[in-house]
Figure 1 (cartoon, rainbow, N blue to C red):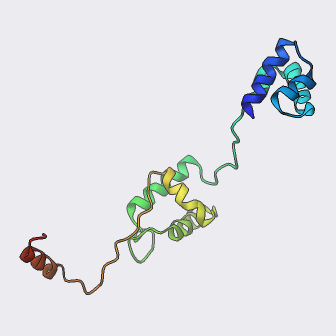
Figure 2 (cartoon, helix red, strand yellow; figure 1 turned 135 degrees about the horizontal axis):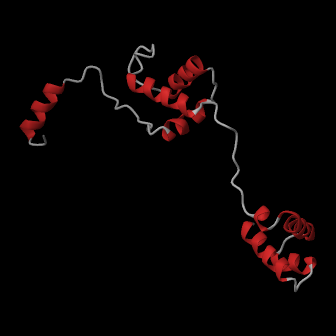
Length: 144
């Protein structure tokens, strides 16, 4: 759409075609071309350029994110959890407790990614696993 709008601006500036002809050429409504023409007249070409949607501002400031990262690097136990495993739910709880900001759990993975952390799946191993026995058997059959 941005390309069509900029082509419309070029055609409007050229002045060889009516707004209706430009609309037909570009496959847009006459009303759209009328709006483009008005913006071009009143605010110039820059007013018709594509603007990135800013979205909702972050609940955490840059300083808060640095503090969050430092707390996560200190470990989950230091943050009051029973094990060292960081989960999205734990990060969500810590953010709410420390900063009073409530993020949906689905957003936490994006936040962690932005902070340079990645989602990792823990290896599942039996509690009864005997590493020494496995090494000995692997060496015996030549796979280790």
